[in-house]
Each structure stands twice: as C-alpha cells, then as structure tokens.
Length: 439
Ligand SMILES: [Zn+2]
Image (cartoon, rainbow, N blue to C red; front, side):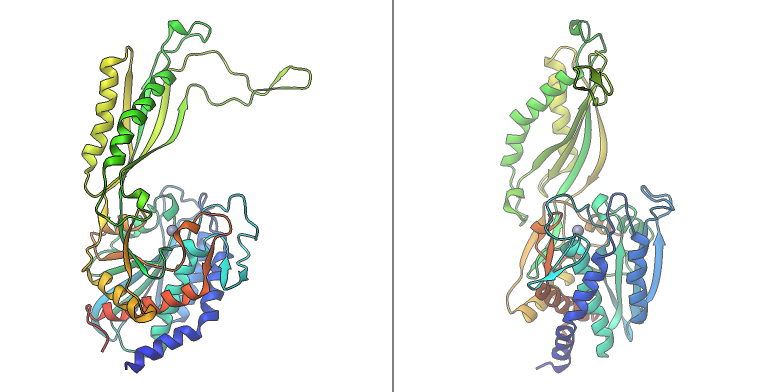
C-alpha cells in the first residue's frame, strides 16, 4: 500500500468544500465572451490564490490582439512552481471565458447555486469546475510535502470560445507551450471523469461569394442575381457534396459517434442589401428603413467544414472549388470567389504518449475502472499547443458532461470535481518523474 499517495487522495477528498467554493467564486465572475467581460478580475482571482499556494505568478496581456482593449483586456494568468529535483513540467490549462447564458435558465446563471450534489451556473462544467479541480490538485500536492521533480504549472487563459488566439495561441507564440519549459499538458475540458480526449477533427472555415450584376428590381432580367447563384451552389452542396461527406468515416473515436464522418455546416448566408426594419403602422403607412429595389450583385456564405484525420486540408478545400468550377461551366453568368477564414489540422495524441498513460493509470487507481479514449468533433485550445507550441503530449481531461456545455442550467457534479482533482494530482506526480509510476 502506498501510504503517501493514499494520504494525498484523502487530502483532496477532505477539500471537497474548497473545490466547490472555488468553482462558485469563478462562476460568479461573469467572464462572458464576447465581448470578454471581467477577464482581468478572473485572472487576478486565480493568480492571487496560486501565489498564496507558493507559485510564481505572471499575467500576460495580448496587447493589440483581436478583441483586446483597455475596456476588455485579454489578460491570461500563468503560475509555476519548481520541484525539488530536475524533471519534466506538467501544465494544467483552463480557459476562463464562458459563452453568454442565453435563454431558458431556471436558476441565476452567475449565482453558482449548489443543489443536490451539483454546482449550477454558466461555466460550471465548461470549464471553471475543471480549473478549480486542477487548482486543488496542485495545491494538495504542494501541501502534502510529497517531493516531486520538474515543475507544475496552471494557466487560466482567455478567448477559447472565440478561437483562443489571444489566450493559448498568444502564450504558445511566446514559448509557454513548448519544450524545454513544458512537457505535458492537460486541459480540464468537460469530457467526463473516465474519458481521455486525444484530439479533435480538423476545421476549414471558408467564405464563398457569388457575384451577379446590379439592376433595378422591377427589371431583374437586366441584372443577374448573386442570390440565385448562391441558391444553385447551396443546392449542389446538399445534393452532391454532403452525401459524399457522410460516407467518409474516421477510425478516430470521435464522440458523439454521429461526428465520426466529415461534416459541413453553412454558418451564414447573406445576400443583397442589409436587412431592413421595414414595417407598417396602424394606418398602413410604412415605418423604419425602406428597402430599395435592386438585384443583388453579391451574396456570401460562410462554410464550416469539419474534416477527419483521413482527409487533408488541400483536398477539403479543392472539392468545394471543383463544385464551384462545375457551376461556372454549366450555369450562365456564374462567378465566385473563395476566401479562407481559418483552418486547423486534425490532431490526435498517441495512446502511448506519457500524458495519456499517466492519466489512464490514475483513472484506474481513483475510479477503479479503465478509461475510454475519445476525440472531439470540434477544436479547442489543443490546436495552438500542437501547431504553435509543437508539443504533442497533450490531452483534454476534466469533470463535467460535455453535452451541458453552452446549455441553460449548466452544472458540474461535485463528486466529479473531487474525482478529477485526484486523477490530475496522481497523473501530475507520475509525469514529473518522467513517466515512472509513483514509488
Ligand atoms: Zn471549453
């Protein structure tokens, strides 16, 4: 029996009220993104706590990044503590931003109500609960006096919900997610306490514009409608491309299983004039902005194409262009442009990577069952760590049910907070020893 590690697990169990209290404190700082409210307050709250635990704390503002301003500073926090001997660094990264509450709540989304073993609120599972679990895990290691090698880090970063460029993306560009500073990263996103998320599908966001010719709306035959051209393109997407995508299956364990194929969403379509607020008053007279009669000369659609590990970005883009070219050949007057908005390649950490093995072993020890391995349909901050940080030893693992993220009445289970803190603590101790199991 390993008494020191049993004592560590008990210590975390005894801090149940503390992990709940920290989750509540973080939920009550309404870091809604967009626009990026209260980031500074949330980063400072975390940083001051971690400084009290004996960690070196830095605040890094992504000055000039998209969204950054003095009113909405993009401030992230990074805390680090060195072990007693040289070794590898384990980093826990959580995003502090949350999405807007939206309608349908039966509780106050920022009150952090505790009821029936759960903490409710926007960000409870995605992912302030996960941050709280990571903090308790690291604090408990430090308080236990168990010697560890290497270093432990915790970061609270901004803007994950809007791409993470000013948060993990910015830090990665400064070397915060690269060797020799950091070796292993755990992102406590709400994947469930017995699931290890190895990576995600790829994404290509592109804007397709169809072009026409402006004319008077009463004589449309003198113009050429970009909106009707877009209609033809969307019809082809649905009739030919989408059925092909649905046939392409990945071997990666993407959850939910419906996302184990290639997918395409049309995020938005806009053609012609800006939408009008035209209406009639009680006397039948028009009020508000009145539309002018013109044939649309431009129509734009944003495509959100999620691709699987077995595909490549060039081919993903090319098959949309092939479809547009086919329309150019067959449809009189058809003209188009394609603009890239964003792309990230699929990523999958190997199952025998150190962070995967250590977390799997810790799950077996704490929960008494083997973990399952999954991949995410959408990207998260791992993409910056892999692409910019060039660090492959990264997983998402944390408390909560993914389906509740971004929903009304979001919650995280208190037992899950405790369980995942125990798993993170054991995994971190093993990793700082270069992957050796605890003595
Ligand atoms: Zn998240």
